[in-house]
Figure 1 (cartoon, rainbow, N blue to C red):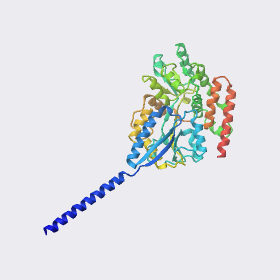
Figure 2: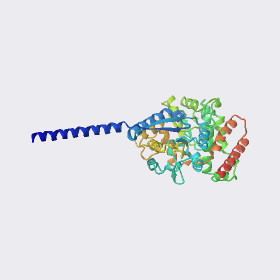
Figure 3: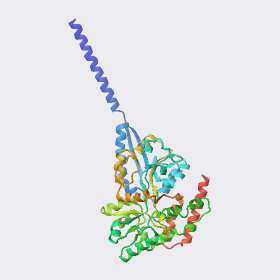
Figure 4: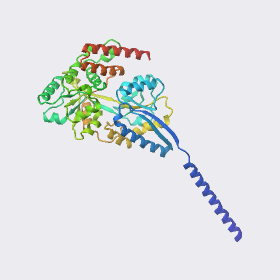
Length: 427
């Protein structure tokens, strides 16, 4: 009996040892499974100033994906400048060389890109249910969410609050009031406007600001008429009143100053106002972190109702319909609006909240712009063909440089819009 019990115990111990050994081998085997490797191609146009923030965030995502799904993600990221990015992206998409994820300007590009079949439907993704009511429609078409909003904007022009306060000035509500502000600044040897026309996308900003205010007040049918080849910019030539006022009261060497230099000059107090958006806040504060600046709507005539803030979404992220890495790309797009991590990302980028789960406090200039929107003094960025905006930037450069007349500029924009209509109707 003793011998039998001893033998049985030995067999049990042996069985346990074998089982433990098998479990250890299984664990070792699981741990040794090589991670799946995925390279995401990402195209981020016009946000090269935020390269460090995006690269850091992508690295965080890669750690998360490796830990949770055993997928090793690497990134092939491009950061072309705002002037060249649109054309590079359109060429890539048209030739079948699309990145997995790409940035674009929602208001400008969604209609054409959607019609061309470049965009994936993201409506069922978790992030889509978090979007705020004011933002969701701007990144949607046919009731489908097709992009992750990054840089939502309420913008007009930037002004130096210290200069305004020192001279007892307030943001003007009409063109006549703006002329008075300009006069007082000139009388006190302060340059009213910073001019930075080296990059064509900057003077192009006058187009949505002037057209936006006019089509939401006195010329509500302008865009419909242009889309039907029945209108002309000569009908809204009053848009040149504010353009000419700015150009006649600005800083020198405008064509030598681009966006980065402009941000530095504005931060240094070289002018009281800059027709530019709060997307430059990070660049401005890097030069002068104590600068107190605000955002106000640009007056375009003497109707205060036409002095409104432009509301839009510029930088947005889309998933290419042809992407071969959709699973990982979707994980990244959802991580862009992660409930915790995205609060830090958007605050570091100085972007506005776009998710119902964003809890960070907006910056003062954001709250100021929002105050106009909350009072009904805002409009959605007007739907102007992207080719017209591109041409407007170049044509305004020529106009500011006195190489073309106002009438020639109007004819140029009219012609470009008609060509855009032909292209749209062919699709």
